[in-house]
Length: 171
Image (cartoon, rainbow, N blue to C red):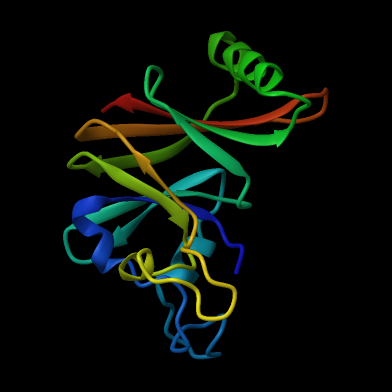
């Protein structure tokens, strides 16, 4: 589907249903599935419920190449850059600039290790090969510490390079 990315704690992964034929986007129903709820996040990031007790961090807008920088508790989104070094330098400048106009994206609670995945994919399907083209759904393990995190985000566009930064700060 190519929807927004989501970070789901490993403990809640089986509760993430992804995109289903019973949802609004694919099924044309009035009942949103998990993918619909992820797509409804406004802004650069947001929090959605996963199951009855968990929550996921949606990295909204587009499925840009994304990595987690554990030293800074930052999800770095590659929007437009010529190299890794250029992207990292742009992210560093955003984080160090006191004038950065951060968007408040809520509070995310996690019990630790998580997985970054396309929000269209059900958590239970991450170990299931695609039927026609083979291979597993794209995913990345994220060693995020357990805790309550204030989430803030900023996308730098205009002057090249372009970078998205979603930062976790202790809540």
